[in-house]
Image (tube, rainbow, N blue to C red; front, side):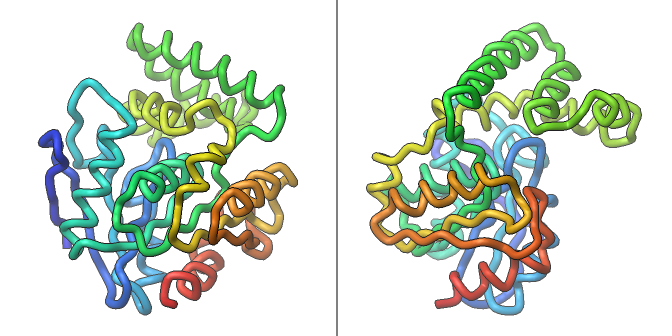
Length: 259
């Protein structure tokens, strides 16, 4: 059932809740809405009380200027309060960075899990992230939303032919509509490095995951996250890449969150 709450600054936060068990909020990454996480929520709902939501600036949630990462943490605080005052968090990609920030920020988070947060593990990748930020900021300031989407897709590793195909797809208009929120995900990622001191303040159990078929640097980043946490562990999801299948991811998460 579709519901809504309001963040500290009055922004509407749209969410849906399903299932029964310990409460878990799923945090989506860039270019996505709560609907993106709905298939995973369905897989988890047999063992967990699962909430998916539209992050601010996308879907049916509102947006209030000026943006700050702290406002997105407050959005999660409002959601957790609406769910009864305590919940676990699971974040995918840059949504994982937001989940980590929320857990480190003193929210009543019981457990936190993340999947393939794209932190840079070498200087060249960090520089590429900084260059992306500069070009993204310019494109969005000039209202060139299509260019902003292309910049993100290139950063994600898509080739030019695939990007041209995406431009011709029915999904392109929707992608352009959420392009301004790319700046939000970029801000959540900070300096693109693993925020070890921040993660060290997370006192709840933490699980950092990578896909078994993903490149090695995804595993390096997941291990670094787990190693930085007082109660962290690293795991893999067999046969998966960055776009993990819900049916493969769900058993790992259910076992962690249902404890």
